[in-house]
Image (cartoon, rainbow, N blue to C red):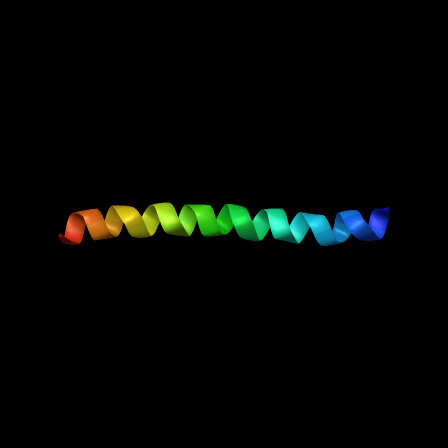
Length: 33
């Protein structure tokens, strides 16, 4: 169970970072066009 949790946490961090990057990219594209 501990091994499963160690796999689950990086996925959550990566999805959270992808959400921030996607939001930042949307703001940059809004400013460019």
